[in-house]
Amino acid sequence: MARKLQEVTAAYTLNKGNLFQIRAYENAATSIEHSTSEVKDLWEEGNLDKISGIGEAIKAHLDELFKTGKVKHWEEIKKGIPSGVFELLGIPGIGPKTALKLAKMGVSGKDDLIHQLRNNILVKKGFSKPLARKIGDALKRESARPKDGRMLLTFAFAQAERILEYLKKTPDIEKVDALGSLRRMVATIGDLDFAIASETPQKAIDYIVKMPGISKVSEKGNTKATIILSGGLSVDFIVVDPASYGALLQHFTGSKAHNIHLRSYAEKNGLSLSEFGVRNVKTSKINQTSTEEEFYGLLKMQVPPPEIREDTDEIELAIKHQLPQLVELEDIKGDLHVHSNLIAKPSHDPGVNSIKEIAKTAKKLGYRYVGSCDHQPSQANHNAEEMIQVLEKKKKAIEQFNYSGHSVRVLNLLEVDILPDGSLGVPDGALKYLDFAVASVHSSFNQSRNQMTMRILRALQNPYVKVLGHPTGRLLNKRESYKVDWKKVFKFAAKNNKALEINAYPDRLDLPDILVREAKEYGVKFVVSTDSHNVSQMDNMRFGVAVARRGWCEAKDIINTWDFKRLLEWCRI
Image (cartoon, rainbow, N blue to C red):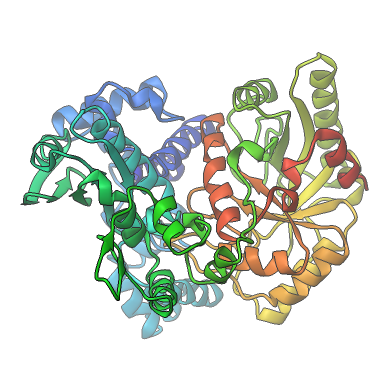
């Protein structure tokens, strides 16, 4: 569905539609792409309003699409545009105008494009050689990515919540939990699996297979079931007696490496572990465990949080009862990366909401402060003096809001582009109006490891820059991280009081958990932010906290767990 809206956006762009229409469809496409629910399901439930960016006009078009299979207005807009344009749009580095140019040069689709690039046909026809090389490199990176069909954590989590909500309605199910990589909050998830405790397993299974939204029941046994949801997602269920639920939950949460190490430790102590319980090897007696606390208790261990069960020292520390107190969602006191609508022509996609609306949402979430962190003014539309005027105006607007006495304080922040040479896209004369800047790489991702490292370090040397935004630049299932000497960056950040962002946007979750833990060992501080462009996305904070937990972060490691006074002291330039 997002793809259909992206095609309409491209058609408006090529037909020189007005900017409002283009942005409306862009926002709607982005919201649907990152929606945690199937759009058709929401339409059937009458809940399309739950998707941010869906106005009345687009809502009416979606209604027409689901009822008739087509939208007359969309067909009219796309009329006259070669069909190959829309196929080419999905290729990295190709926008509407480039796609149209390629189509006019006889490129019929992706396979044909690859053929013409490989045989230098396009360049011979007069196509830009640097652009051809750029597109070719992007295609090579895309083909190198594993096609494992894994879904984003946020999508899997929302699907699981809907399933859990249904399962908890019956008295025949006493306990239910998600298992595997979802319970461990891994960035991408395969299929969904659930553990269920029930004294009446057949009744539980019968209830499961009656769940709304099922397209097929693949398996139905006495204690197991597998269903396929209408969107094609496979879901497995296993039902056990409540007395042995703890062992089942532990076993199927994983990870494999954690369980192998745990079994080895148990064997040295005369015990054997399985999903049925803890067996004494000498007596063959199986001790059933109804909870994980009981299971790990028989091993005389603390219970490692699911997020860190990856065999990375958690077992040794649990044996010693020295596990850290990982950060909790409730520890977060503010979101420092929320895009507002204060800047009319930003360098990248603008925020939808006013600072008043953002502060209102922050209050609902229990925050004490929030950062209005818009993309910098576009260099294409502003010279240095105009940038200064824009940021001076933004500062005054935020000061006026803060003087109004709202319980949530708004910080005046800016997401600044790190240019290819490491300089910033905004002059210091404009940056002085901020509380601080978040510096991010938004272009030239293919620089060498040394170039990218030097680029980032130069940007962090600017005194107004306090945070490195979405540090690796990865987009899950879309774009790999760029190459960086992270040890140099971590050392510099720790020494110079710079924080690294753990960006909770669904397809980023960046800094990745492995690098979070490595950075923490260097003494680096972090900020967990949502990078929200709509207040509805501010709920994604939980996923950023999950990354922080997987990186073994405690509350003290994260600056937005601090009170406002301490935060202000930290960000003083």
